[in-house]
Length: 393
Image 1 (cartoon, one colour):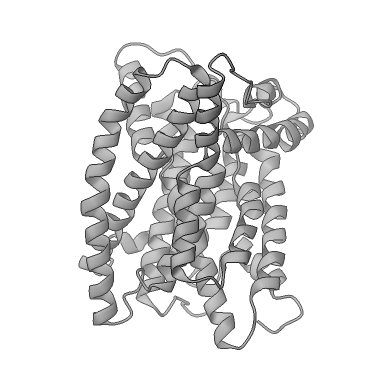
Image 2: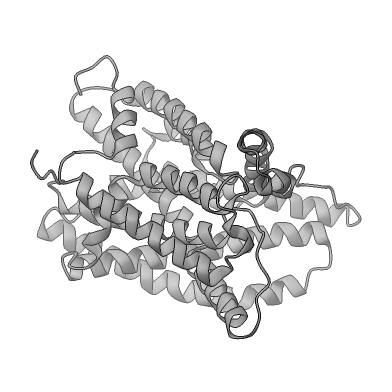
C-alpha cells in the first residue's frame, strides 16, 4: 500500500488542532482516573508535584479541550454538507443517520467510561439540522443566545424571586458507580457505567451549562466554516484567516485573564447557593470559551507561521479522533479500574500523567503508521462506510 495523506493544508491544520484537543482530553482523563476519583495518599515533594501537575492540566485543558472538539464538530458538519451540496445532494438525512451511528459508538464507549461525551454529541448534533440553511446573521444570533446560557439566567431570576429555594439539580452522581469501578466484576462495572454512569454524565452536562455551550459551539464551527476562517488554501484565504485569528487572540486572551481573576470576586458577592451555582456555570462557560478561542487562534497562527513544522505531528492523531477517544477509554478503564490492573490504588497525579503520556505516544505512533497505509482511521472507516451505506463512497 502507498502513503495516503490529505491534500489540503487547511485540513491538516484542523486535524492537528483536533489532535491537540484529544491530547488534552487523554491527559485529563488519566489524572482523573477516568472519572474514578480514587487516589493513593502521597506526601512531601510528590504531593506538591501532584498538586502542581493537577492544577496546570486543569487550567490548560479543562473545559477547553472539549470546547475545541465541539467547535470542530460543527466545522466538520460544514465540510460534509458543502461536499454534498456540490454534488447536488442534501446531507440532512445522511447526517442524522450518522448521528445515530455516533450514538451507538457512544454506547460502546459508555461501557468503559462513565463520563463519555459521544452520546451527548450524538443527541445535540441534531441542533445543526434546522439551522443548516439559515443566514449567517440568524446563525450568529442563535449561537449567541445559547452561549449566554438562557436556562441559567432563568434560574437566577427564580432565585431572586424565591431566595429560600435551593432545589436539587444533580439527581444522578458519578459517585454512585464508584463501588462497581473499584470492584472486580467487569459485568457489574459495565451495567453501572452504561446506565447510572451515563445518566450522571448527561445530568452533569445539563446542570453545568455544557448542553447550551456545546450547541453554540457546534453552530460557531459551522459559521466559521461558511466564512472560510479555517482556510489557508491560497495566499488571500490564508491572510484573511490570519487576520481573523489574530484579532480573536488579541480580544479573547485579555477577556479570559480578566474573567479568571474577577469571577471569584463575583462569586463572593452572592449568598444564595442556587443563584451562585447558576452564576458559576455562566462565568465558567464564558471563561472557557474565551480561553479556548485564544488557544485555538494561537495554535492555528503557529501552525500557519511555521507551515506545521512541529504541530503537523498531531494531524494523523486528529484524523482518527473517534478511534483515539474510544481506545483511550478501553485502555484507561483496564489500567485504573478494579476489574483490571487497579492502578488507582498506587498512581497519584504524577504517575497517572506519565501513563497518559505513554498512552498518547502509543496512539500517536499507531496513527502515523496507520495513515501510511489507509485513508481513514479504523473506527472512522466503519463510521464512514455505514454512513454512506447503499452508495459507492
